[in-house]
Length: 139
Length: 233
Image (cartoon, rainbow over all chains, first blue to last red):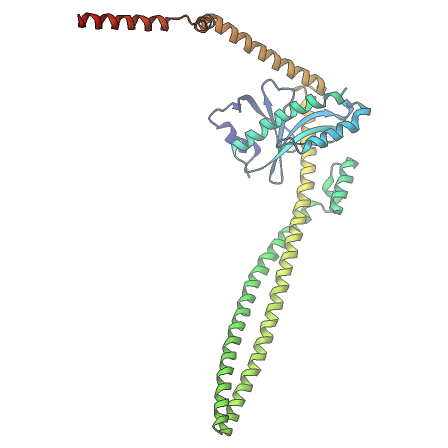
């Protein structure tokens, strides 16, 4: 079984290496119990995407905000807005991991470089738009 | 359906060993072994199925053959009776009785094979359903655990200072500011380039109908007309 970084090799070997759909990026492995690779897009350093693998899937996660950032009285409205947006949002969905709200997408572990690139760039765009749209519910 | 509820309870409980909490005390490995065993059982059942189905087909062919033979002897017996050959007809009737006994046997065998095939097919179906269910459950448990573990690593990494823990709103402001800066820089550069290359003046002149091309065209035409006059005079 190839490691996650090895699978990402195909992305690094694309003709316009170093950019994904016009965005400059960097891969950085994160040490820990499971394999995690951080993807940082230039000018969006505050919203990196983390890739990890589970059960034949690559999961791409962008952590959005913590539970304690949510304005308490707007919480329900925020959750409803997130549910409303879940289906229309291309390729990504909202989720929650512990205290973090996140936006994520999952890919087959044998996905092609162009699928991975599409997933990551769309996820990054969705994350920024979601932050912008949901910031009214945050402190 | 029960599994979803268990998983939700375990996640909300905030424990780390989700697999052990909701599968059984021996965790995921037992589940995975069960899946492997079930897959092996399906493989064997499928081999078995092929053999039994072949036997069922053989019995079917044998039945066809026996029925044809019986029909043949029956018509012969009838012919013999018409001719008054009672003794020989009796002998043929004996043969028909033998064939019918054999037909009964074959029909029963075919029935048994068919029942066996149906049973094995049902077993394979059920085993497939069990595998699908187990695989989905394991996938959910593993994904939950993996993502939790990944989040722990990521949180430690962020706390470690290589990327700062910043409130979402502040992150958004920074990104927006950077995007604004970039777009301002791009439009400034565009204006500057246009000015330096003189493109803007040229464009204005062209828009006013003034330019090199118009003049040159007139000059060429005048020259040609002059030439024409020279040659005709």
